[in-house]
Image 1 (cartoon, helix red, strand yellow):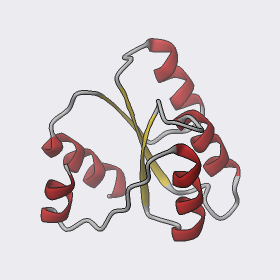
Image 2 (cartoon, rainbow, N blue to C red):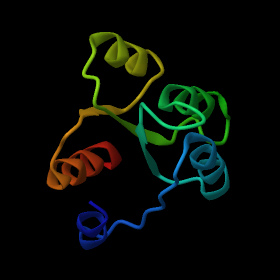
Image 3 (tube, one colour):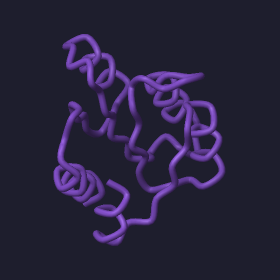
Image 4 (cartoon, one colour):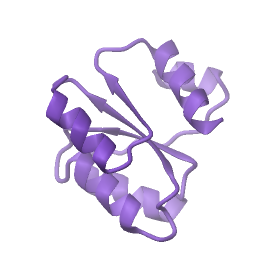
Length: 104
């Protein structure tokens, strides 16, 4: 996936857990965040909640990934104003297409 993102012209950062991810978002203020629902130390919904409640970050675009494929997760994500949702597994090309859609 990282190869496809780089080849498509995106600069990206990866973090191993939710806490580090949220710290990176606060520091880097990216245009878009791709979040997994299931993360160590802090789940994707909590990160999204904090992004949306932060005045400097609230307009950051967010795509959430899930392997659960449960309706309640989808509803929860959209209630927190996620920009897009993807079920895993997915093809890297699909992620690139969705990133471009959300950013444009």
